[in-house]
Image (cartoon, one colour):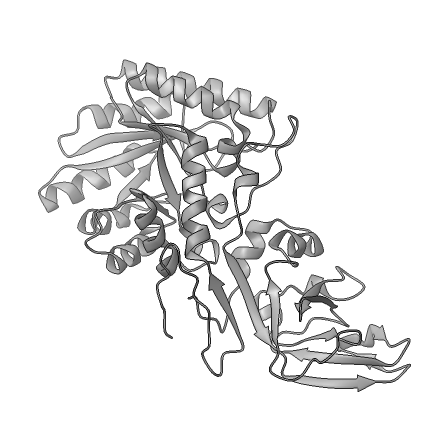
Length: 401
């Protein structure tokens, strides 16, 4: 399947015959979103661009080069496989790649071989990296994650963290380049859980210093933490106090989305971002139905008037959620600049929409499934989920350009 890499300042569109649906990515918006995050994060703060989960459904092969061109010196991926793919895509870029999720001992050799930087949180992780680094013949950096309230990855402050730090302090082959954590409620200004997490992270940083470990970076901020502001002031001050640099890890914000900040009004970042993705398809059929006729599985929709319907070749297998069905989420698409409501149940590969009041619709007309007028937040509302989930779920017969 062809891929054309988008560049900042350019917007590529798809004209590939036979595709049932496709995604268009604005390189200019992606680059501008990166610059907006960097501006709000503050002078001297390193911005790690998260491209895990195929760049939140936007296509890492397309987005990563744009982000590096915009100034990203770090990229964040989920696992070893994503990291290797990224290295193969841009082997000479010099960009650093942080593998953020779920390191296994068997990943260490691949991490060293491909110049990837893992997140570790056990002495066993460090030992695995030591063995791989020794075999590779050179010292390697890692970032240590601290558990501060998510109960996922991370060494708890105290004995668990002490074991990791002791191993690092005495290691000839592995160095601690960064110390990090992750917040569970970063979009809630003044959240009690965030206060507790920051207290735990502060204690961890004191423990790191006492162990004689001197990281270059400390980081905990995702998009919402950058937007909220108070957390950023805290981490900048902490980093400065220990002679390190603050780093932030924006993900969904790079692609133009930001959770609303709760408790203190609007954040400072959300208004500066613009969605990067448009998802499109074409009308493949038209039909008129009379009063009393039913539409779709389960005959859940019964026409109360004469209607003109358009058939689209997408469904829940492609990421257009079944919850968008009429009578459930009451979703819509955009046809000729107007809303066309979903009629009946969304099928696996097909959806029917109402074009009765939209003049001149013909087979082959372009249809906007996600973009201006039908946002990821709209899709999320129909489905009772969040924009992250929607974006990552867009899949199937698509090309990213």
